[in-house]
Amino acid sequence: MTLRKIGATLTAATAIVAASAALSAAQAETWKFALEEIKGSVQDRYAQKFKELVAERTDGEVDVAIYPYGALGTSADLTELAANGTLQFTFASPGHLATMVPAIGVFNLPYILSQNDEVNKKVLTEGDTVYNMLAPALEEKNLKLITMFPEGEMVWTTNKEIREPADFEGFKMRVMTSPILTESYKAMGADPTPMPYGEVYGALQLKQIDGQVNPVFAIEEMKFYEVTDYMIWAGQQEFTTSVVANADFYEGLSDEREKMLNDVTAELADYIFQVKKDYAQTRLDKIKEARPEVKMIRLDESERAAFKEAAMEARSVYTEEAGAMGEKVLEALTSEIAETEKEMSD
Ligand code: 6CS
Image (cartoon, helix red, strand yellow):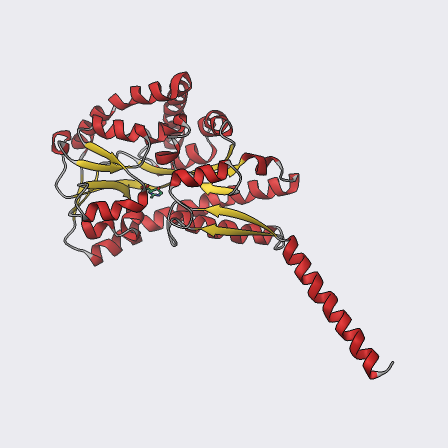
């Protein structure tokens, strides 16, 4: 073979390698996954690990593209984008999602979940109420429920001390957009103001609102502690979230991909529970260090009982909103929690 021929053969071989690399890159599938939270958040940690496991289990055939909060719109926008198939996955927290699927608003009711973290984990990640009753309600909106999990106890950040419902008089409390939350805070004596997450810092700074409620990690990363005087633990709510997929996309998955997705989801349940536990402490330490003057108050049992009693009124609003289905869900969830608490204490 002449030198010229060898050169030509090598050029052709290089072209084939390059073309097949381009082809396999083109064959790699991208799953778009949107977050309701910023980089470094609990949702981001979940999605990053999801991306890593999916790439590993598909030998790089599937790449997960992550869109942090702010890239695509509000929580309500993200749910719409997943329902219409623009996104394959999104986080959808009941605090906003209940506007579209009222039944899931059961998780917005104060004092509904257990004070035992493990009980909440079990009920959310594998419970009958969530997967047999609420998942079909989401499917009606073209959303496949992949999982739910707790992100941390919600804490009030306020500009005054709140120890009893009367202290909430005239107090503008920012809540997520679900009407059940508005009714819940009205029942506890406050003047609730629903608004998207991205507007909360500015509203606190401009004193358009007097306080807001979110888990500690969010108070830290969204810098709400910079514009607050008190952090108050009233034990009223665990922040819960769900991961949903576009239902048509999910239906179109091969059996192998569906199994892979289920395995990854099951594996992530323990991982994310540990992340949320670590964040509850490490992010609180960061706040204390950055702004030691924030007063931290833990309401005692009798103070909590007064808010709990007041909040009970909102349960009838939930059953009105979610109809007959809501009544069944509320009953099923409360008995499932009681049974799981009993099981875990035995
Ligand atoms: O308060 C909110 O709107 C948001 N809070 C958290 C912790 N995650 C997402 C949600 O939209």
